[in-house]
Length: 639
Ligand SMILES: Nc1ncnc2c1ncn2[C@@H]1O[C@H](COP(=O)(O)OP(=O)(O)OP(=O)(O)O)[C@@H](O)[C@H]1O
Image (cartoon, rainbow, N blue to C red):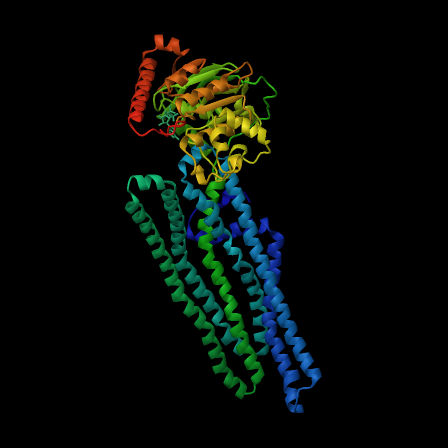
């Protein structure tokens, strides 16, 4: 069954059918483990019912004769021990098989779906990630997966209980149909009570599961924004926001607990009343000679042992709402469309620098993300977007045509919101153009095999991410790179000096998100991470903004130096950086307004002149302010 068949619809009448479909998926994923669990459960069921038979047989054929004989012989004791011990042993084996099989099913299927969900996160385009808070993603991969498959704990038991009930009912009828009739009345009552319990619980459990996800989302957001929260003095506000959602979860959990608390005693009491009724009617039946006392005891025992496992049905029914809510949330991730398609082309061994070409590239965030989510295919660049934006979508880039020669350094300059980062994302294929084409060495990036582009092109983004790992781990990302190469990359990024001074050099742990480093140090490690891969095309999206301007210049000069240089696209704000580039592309409102050397643009493009003059003025003002203040770190400025 295709997984997407299971996500649709929310009518309560369809709940059971949909739950069965989810269960079928789990069974198909782990058929052997599930079969072991059910076998164990059936064994347990048969033997629990059989225990009454065994006790009856032992009483009639061993204990009663022993009483008449005036003592228990060693032979009889052995028989009694073997029969009862054998049944107990097999029952224990049944319980073990059920628990181990059920547990492994839950954990294996859960792990499998966790992997599926996280793989899907990696496949899904940035547009999708922009729409889903990370707290929700955490909740999907953890709590929702768990909620979906927990049903496999009570499920095997409830299947075994069916067999047990059948075996028990047959025994009861064989002993005495009248007393069996009285005793068996409790089972429809138990089913009815369990069904009512499930109906009441359904809505409450659904609500609690949704609130669990909300709590995770709010908590994650607060932790992520801890710095902002502190700086802006929003601790109180954040605490109340978290308290409010936790309170709603607490209320929902209490409501569910109260329902459970109300139903539990009722469900527990029904078998006791059943046993009482059987004993009450049974006294008359014994008096009339229809049954013996031993048979009456056997019947009463059967009712009491059968009644408890029947609760397993209640547990399964109680799990169904959680299963469905969990599954709907997990399935929404698995069904999200828009993962990028790849071709099989390779870039081969070209020159040290790659040629970058953009042909009539237009990009609209709304259109692209909508297409990504609906799978309409517009991300593949098939849908031509009117340059006027007649679809009403905000267009981030319009009809950009650009050719960057191998080894060239091009600076992308433009006011905020001009589309510079969007352009950077298109070059390394974080996103695909709405129309037009991006090519590296003449090959459309969409035709490249998975991993081919990443092997040749690297982006150092505006905000650096540092893993809670050593400097080496952050630079190599686990790849087997010789130390000499790591140091060479760090040297080019001008990070070797401060790293050599760290207590353990490149083996120093840098803390979560590089907490022990300054902004400029983090940026230089991120740059080294890109450089160690020897990219033929390097895209720097304001990647050295926290580095001292003279160091930034030295880095860029080193990157663009020599005949065997890589191609560099640098999104730049400092006049000194811009002036270092071979060429400048000036963007404004998503359009390529002009392109040429810095001097050419200064002589003919007023918008460019205004912008870089403003940048230079701002830099001079900041330098003046810095000079008035305490002498700061001579290497980096955390702007
Ligand atoms: N994820 C997004 N979803 C929708 N619109 C976006 C998204 N990211 C950027 N935009 C819009 O696209 C346009 C270009 O943004 P982009 O980030 O490329 O500009 P930029 O030139 O890099 O700006 P800055 O210099 O401020 O970083 C802006 O109007 C922005 O609001």
